[in-house]
Length: 331
Image 1 (tube, rainbow, N blue to C red):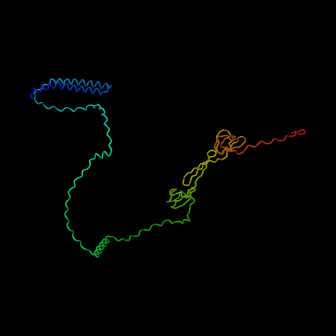
Image 2 (image 1 turned 90 degrees about the vertical axis):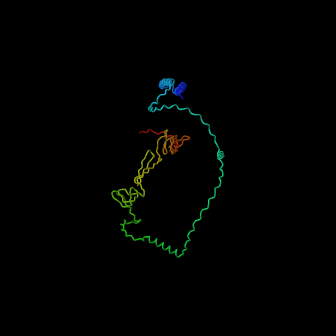
Image 3 (image 1 turned 30 degrees about the vertical axis):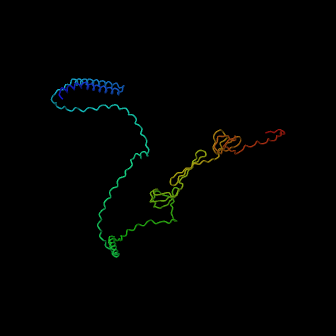
């Protein structure tokens, strides 16, 4: 193809290429503008400025394309590679696709039907018989006496490998231990002196209990209490009828018990209020005892907790009228 034909084709294609580029740029501008946030004014101004520069540059390119006239020039020198372009801004995520169609369930019987039936294979060819082995050498016969001799020789050989035991040297005699004591003559010391050291197996009284040393002692270290006793006992009264007993055992264990003793306490003439078991009051000329905690009045119908102790006595009979005295009585 000659240069004239190339020039004619380029001029014919120039409007088409220019229009195609313009449409692509317009589509790009519309797509960008649609995806921009309408409230982002600063970004909008930047995009307008960028689009204006793109339009100006595209106008220059279009002019150059339209005025393009190929000339048979000499081959130019290859230009240097340009700097790598920067990464563009990530585009907006596309819209979610439509949901797929739900798959159909299939029964195990249908799956089995889909499995092709196996085809019976053809029988293979029988293998050839192997070569007969070489005949073995005939064994020699041996008598029972020869077997006994061989066994005896092996026993003698093994016995020679066994080392005979040698008597060892006598060891040094150990020291005599402390003499034991008869159980019936067990000595129990009256007390433990912490400044002294007692040998193992000593028995002594301490803090109301029985103690035994399980090793040589140092103070109270090495002693154990085998029979508990009461080292200290105290009783404290809390309120009118509550008593607390506190016992300290020989081993140091502390046990406390609280007791309530319903002792009878006279509270005087009954007044409205609460009374405890053991309280005694006077009401209506009688004495009443409280058998259970109550707020009731003694003697009333339905009253609970009160029991009559001393009933009011009856009035005595009227006395006989006295006689007038005779004469004058002087005092």
